[in-house]
Image (tube, rainbow, N blue to C red):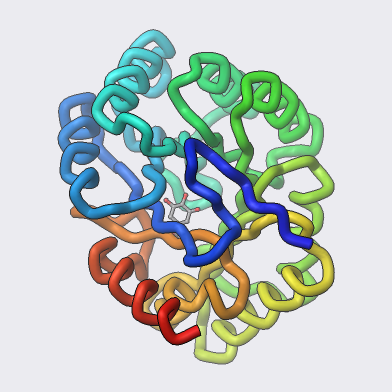
Length: 254
Ligand SMILES: O=C1C[C@@](O)(C(=O)O)C[C@@H](O)[C@@H]1O
């Protein structure tokens, strides 16, 4: 039974997949400007990719930027993501600093979800989940393979592990080397949702070969999809406006 995750009136895991637009600005000005450009698109969630932010290691500045971002975005849910260089992000970070960052931002009340890389270490993930939940913040556990697509059983194992660690939304992004790899990701998604998941999951196959996986979530079981406004944060993201049209068209035929 799939229980949706509700953040500020957005039910992730129910109906049409939700659209999340990443912000990859380096300065506070760029970040706030990007947020203003996202507003008219009708996206559901904004992801602040803080690994791009020049002041990410100065928490006072992070908190102030988060506050201003909240002011610009109003009721739009914010996902706070530090994507580490190990998983395709812009910067490296020590695990204790990474844990503390996610815990501290959860306590501010400015963000609704935090992304925690699932293979940081079980204790680290559990510590972030515990603190986030204390403040009503949801945790997206994530894993990225920018080189290849693991076997279906391995993808399912990773998603189940995230669920066991207490994440609210397990997420995996993998790179296809051919079209069969895209089918593997979709088959893993379908099997996870049908047999194991009791909460929404997010999956995608990256780059042009995988782009179909970003539009068919409602069919195979991925609850949210990333679309760009301006600069994309990963290969294969299409424009959020086009994505919305495609999801709406598909939804109407289902
Ligand atoms: O985990 C993800 C998914 C993603 O990598 C994608 O492929 O759309 C984009 C990232 O910004 C996000 O944190």
